[in-house]
Image 1 (cartoon, rainbow over the protein chains, first blue to last red):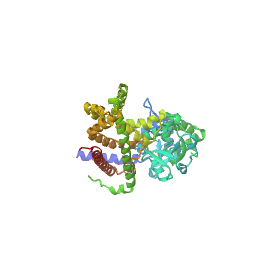
Image 2: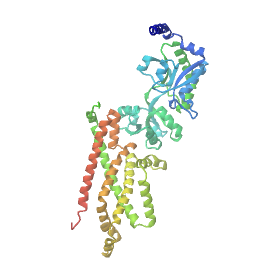
Image 3: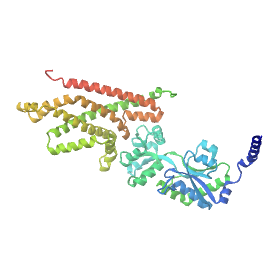
Image 4: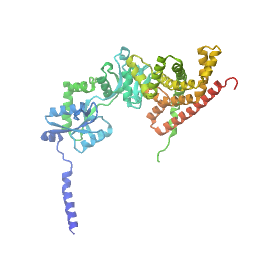
Length: 265
Length: 222
């Protein structure tokens, strides 16, 4: 009998709790301003966008971007290190207000979250040396008769295999490191790779810094946020637009990607 | 096991496999001839040359036999350009395989030379043969006959080891396999077929070497 009673009480309590569990329609921006802190999910394993520094503190393009937004809002930034698999769940469960985690846009993601304007360039392209012959290459047709190195199975290698002129030779290497080594050793003067890889080469081997010839596939990074937060979205877009015109984004690009923002970004 | 085999997925790539197979065969032939020649020179140098040449050849043999083949290959392809020596992937592959077989065959052939009785060499000299004639007709011929099976095995090992050259984008049989696997993700089928091709290649290589051996060593009076 007592058992039945306690069950009934539990049930009543659960029922009473239901209205509380409903998503509150409060404005996320107002909540952030009130709390004085913004929680931002950043990558921990994806340099140069986000990785652990020597002191194990996260650093990278995305962390700088988070701090830039926090500074503009005048609130403290709480950095949450996430992986690419759990970054969207963190947002959906409101453990994070924003995801700044080299997030690309696609239709499936657009169904569950909103995206800001692009804040960072992310693309794969064909890179070359400063050699005058190579410097003339500006579009895929120019690869006729040229030799390009690429990592076998990568997006850019598959794309090149489909679209490059038949007289172009594609040298396929086992992994990114072999492709980089072949480029640095001068075995190839052109490589197809991502802008982050090109940045890594430029940082370690400035004598043979790769320069962008043309873009193969463009997929810039966006700030991800929960749906139906128009005030927060407008504010974030406003901050990104200001950072773009004010030159802060250009500075971030130079600092982390070792290159200017691409034209038209 | 619920995995369904799809060998038909390999069909569109048959020309790639064939090209890779031909490349592997050519690579093996060229580096076998060059490597055996290098080994013969090395063995002669170690046995009949001056002491410093023996030491030098010995050092070469030890360095090559005690380092991994892939490291030797990477050194030639990725490392040497820093010293101003830039070789394309095919040349680098041939060079690495030649240098590798050269070191192993130096020791194999040297063993053969040492097994030639001194009396035979003296007999050659007493017949007014020059030193070079003695080396060619008396020493090397007998030496090769003795070590031929060991040399054949080493050649097959080098042929199988050539799979590594796919790592520097040389388009051999393994490169074809890796490429196909990166396109249709049928790793099981691709590597099964390629393993079969290597097995076949090894059997054919042994048979061919045995045939050549029969032709060459069927001397007069036998």
